[in-house]
Structure formats: C-alpha cells, structure tokens
Amino acid sequence: MSLLLAPSLHARFPSHAPSPSGPTALSSPRPRTSGRLSRPQAARGISRVDVLFGLSAVAVIACVAVTMPMRGGGGLDSQFKLAELAQANDCYANDFAGRQFGVMPANAGEYGDNGATFVSSAWCPRQLYLGQDSNGAIWGYFLGSGGFCGSSGFPGSVGNWDVYRPINFSGASAGYGFFRMPNAVGLREYLAKNFYSPEFYAEDDPTYAGVPALATAPSEFTFPAPGIPGGYENSSYCFSPAAMLNPGVLRARADGGFQAPASFADSYRSPAVSQCAYPSLKTRMCEYGWYRGAPDEGLAFNAGRKSSPFTLFFDGSVQTVTMAKAEADDIIVREGSKSGDGLWSDDTPFGADGWRPTGSVDGARTSFHILTTNGILGRDLLTRE
Image 1 (tube, helix red, strand yellow):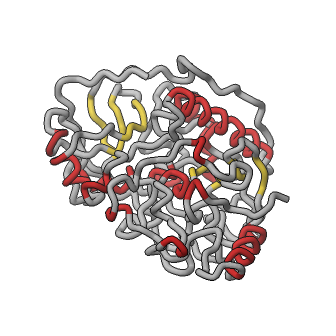
Image 2 (cartoon, helix red, strand yellow):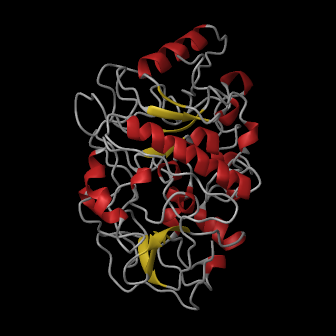
C-alpha cells in the first residue's frame, strides 16, 4: 500500500451533528443503546480531507485471497465469505510478521490508554482510513493535529481513540471498537477495493440491500452511503476483540482476573497468530448479527440460544455455532473451576452478564467470541459439533 499525504490536510465541511471534537467531526461512533444492533451514526470523527491517496486495492504484493462463488443467502454466502476472510487474514499475517490486523499502538497502556497523552508524549499513530470518495477526499477516524500529530494537519480529535481500541470496556463507546472494522484500509486490499464490498456483508444482513450498487462505485468510500440505513454501517463480520488484546487483559480469575488496558504497558500488544493455543476452538471472526431465524430485527449474534452465527476459527475452518452450545460449554467449565472461570470472562466492567449489546430474548448468557478468557490463549468451545 502506498500513501501520499499532501503537505497540509484540512476538512472543508461542517459537522453533521454536534460534537466536542470540532467542526471536522461527524456524529458519534458509539453504539446506540436502544436494544438493537449498534449502528454508528456516521461515526464521530469520520472526516474528509483533501489529500493525495494512492492505494493498491485488491492486488497485494505478497499474497492475494482467492475469490470464491457466493450467492443465495441462507448463510451459504457467509460460509464462503468467512473462508475468504480467513485467507485475507493469513495473507496479512504473512506480510506483517505473523501479526493480526489492528491500528492501536502496542504500548498505549504505558500512557494510561489515553489518546491525548499518547500523541503528546509518544508519537502520531497511523490513522484509521476508510477510503477515498469520488471527489478525491479521504475519510477516516482521525486523531486531530495535536502533539506529535501537529505537523500532519489531521482533522478530528483524540476522541476517536475509542475507535482504535479493539473494544471499549467502559465509557460512552463501551462495547464498540475496531473489532467491528475488518473492511478498513489495511486488510481490505487483500479482498476488495471498496468499503461497501459484498465480501464484507452477509446477504442475510439487512444492510446488504444497498451494498451491490456501492461495490461497483468508483469511490472507495461514500458518506452518506445511499441505500445504507443511517448512511453508514460496519461489516456484517467482526473480529474477536479478545484475540486482539494482550492475553493478560482477559486473564483468568485463577491468575488474578481482568486487567484494565490502562493498567499495564503492553496491554494492546496484539498476539501473533501463531500464539493461538486452540486453533480449532478459538474463534477469529463471527457474524455480528442474528441474521437468520431471529424473533426480531437488529439483534446481536448472542441475543438468544437459537442464534447460530457462521464463525471462522483460527485453524481456518468455518461453521455455524449455536449460542445454546456456547452457553452449555461455558457452564461446564465454570462448574468445574474452583475460581469460577468460564470460557469467557465475566469479571470485566461489562459485569456478570458480559457483552450483550441487544440483551437476550431468552436469558442466554454468553460472551462467546468477544470476551474469551485468556484471549488468544483461551478457547470458545470445548468441542466442535
């Protein structure tokens, strides 16, 4: 990927919603709290700036994922798309010394996990780019032009630090984070050119209706995106934030329990893919929503025991996993643990019920995939069906 920045970057349009981050910011990226799937309202700090941007889309020097047929909905397309994403992730790891895709500085914890402190005391991190629009402007979650970013002229503000974290455990953006953005610039080039490419959206996701037209558009990113509810929507697929964090964050109770990322220096040092201890039992990506057979629209994948999202494991295999199975396996582990440890951590700031952005329709209690105990060193299931 080649990125050329003009000497002076600036945004040339006002805020679409009130925001403390200034006139270059759009509305907040945090999830809605109405009991439905989170849809960022155009994403706070998504700013357009006039720059020169060169991007080698689709073709990447070292490795290119192979396109496979995917049609018909009913989950079949998700099975193929997750298999493609497995290849894309492996290609990325091959090109970047075994690393997982992410944008958070590895040593952010050393600066108290505070964006303002980091950019004023460490360096200006790589910005989170979403793509170029039809006018040649770049959109992204920018961290502003303070501190070491002073010479960049970036718009936005360090309030967008929330989007760089794999997941936010507290605050206004709790439950949201970079784990929702596999189609950001960096990984996307291994599969497709555009943010709204079919490779990143399940046909059973209501968002998909607007995707085909955007996929063939000349621009890489459009806001507001016609045909997309709210003008902006993340991918149908999400990473496991647990796997993206230092395993010490979601540490087992037996070893001392949860540690806030701000409490130790390398909390955001993403583990290498090779560190996965249970490749066939640890999830890598998963459908974010309950897209088939849900009792209501807009429910998260863990909102009920009958939900069975297509899931990609670290060994590259893809299959559906029912939340009933995930919950049952977790109960078995908890009942056999003297310290009360389960397959997922229930001692985080999310509380005993864990990550449940849309609640539960039947009392299901699982943070499968999201809060895996010991992160990449843990497992999300005891056995595969």
